[in-house]
Image (tube, rainbow, N blue to C red; front, side, top):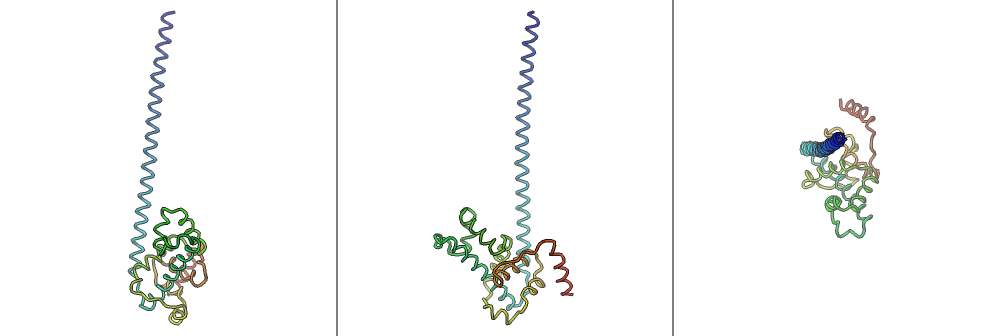
Length: 214
């Protein structure tokens, strides 16, 4: 009987040791899973950052490579500055209490990052205009690169010089993101809202534009 009792005690102790080891292994596996998830998140964030930087580099290269005449540049600048002013005005109309704190569109873009109220209003304004953040990046990049040397033309003056601004943009601007941003800026000013073309319709449109060019 004593031997059996001793055996049972030994077996229980062995089972406890095994249980402790299993718990330790489980904890290690959880830690490894957490480490793997953290590394995956960091990798994904790093990849997105690199992709964003590459896209920004392409955008700047495309903007600086534009071969417009001074008149064409002034016309594009006019649409860009008008859409930026329009966006700023719309934000202030929705946030009258923050007029003094948001003197420029740059202040809106800067403060929306940490201020949820401003961010929600900004996103609402973009949606009303049919615009997205990528469009704003495009027009702001154009404005920063060329705004210092361009003049504003009123709508009547623009029409005197160029009849089809859409064709000029699609014909001269090769970077797709920049082209889309400029086209939508024109649409917002001329029609009140940008029209977003579904992806499946873009290829036939490009083929049509290409055939016209040739």
